[in-house]
Length: 252
Ligand code: MF3
Ligand code: CO
Image 1 (cartoon, rainbow, N blue to C red):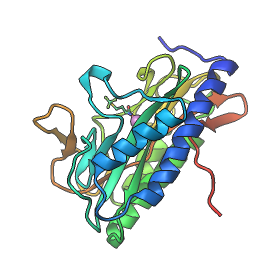
Image 2: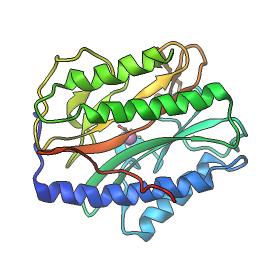
Image 3: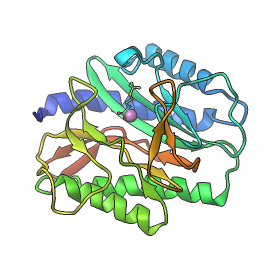
């Protein structure tokens, strides 16, 4: 069942989203060679606490951290750990913020110091793919229009789209209907309606799209060891088009 959200519920989620966006803007300054994802996780948890919010992922199905921190060939759900990040790494920090019962979900990939040209292209293509998906998230379109826009752009650029993890509705719960695959055919799937709130969160690999699971039962990584990036926003479908609830303020 897809729960449509009221204007008031969307406003509440937007407040959570604004705080989450602020966290990511802080992280873009904080993430430098030598920092650990453990320290990043601690920073996020205390920042949220200071602002009256909580990390919704902590305790979710036994998950122990405020954030997921996925390094290099890790696709998603990496554990924060005490190993320093190295120059040239890429790291994706994903979190769900709960502010007064309003939820918002956003992941962002960061370069650690200087990264290779191929890695720069991976980050650029993945971020652009997210925004091309968002453009299609308008009432009357179908869910396949989102996946198709993302997949065709990513593949034109020689990368691949992860199939095993998809976007999701979000509201009272972190994961709701509808499912939002980042691949698919234009004109196919459920029709998008005003009041839907969901994530679009493409994970893009340099090599093959397939993933394998670590022994910890959480962390997914690429089968071929190639690198993976991810950008995620929570969006609401309004009459005039999609509104990004987790949008970061432009710098400058
Ligand atoms: N934020 C993730 C998503 O985009 C969910 C992480 S799973 C958790 O769906 F257990 F770590 F919360
Ligand atoms: Co997320």
